[in-house]
Length: 110
Length: 113
Image (cartoon, rainbow over all chains, first blue to last red; front, side):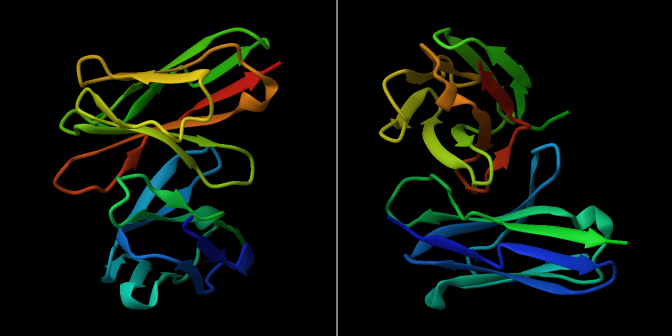
């Protein structure tokens, strides 16, 4: 089956630092989404990005579908950025299920 | 609130009991998905509906799990004869057919004693 690998698994940053989270996937995809799961378990949509680059405030994402990876950039991190970041992909010709990675757990300290 | 809603938010039950969870999708979305998330893992896909048709159910975890969406609006997920291993967060998501960006509800946390 499809492999969705996220790195690093854990990350600790001081407030104000920048970071890059990576998602590698093993097959061609129709869709790729990045989510932030807050401490209460709610998955918050960050980006819908099957290809290209998007920016939203301090966050940006880039997906290079031909090389099967996506990157999530967090700049000037804040304590409220803490939580788990998930990458999820929808396979080509395999229905609409999202296949999730195991996530990157981010802790931003004051 | 126009997001995905789920009820109940928490459910504690004894092993062997049946439980049912409800999901109300975003109103203009005709695709609805169920996922399960266990501690330390990403969500795992279970099943999905397009309108009232259940188009994928092979990934339901066992025959104790079933889902319905009788009128193409809200959906229910039922687990019969619950086991301790069913303890998890059950998440619902919805999307439109035009853009398959999925939006998730807050989840139902199930604890089986």
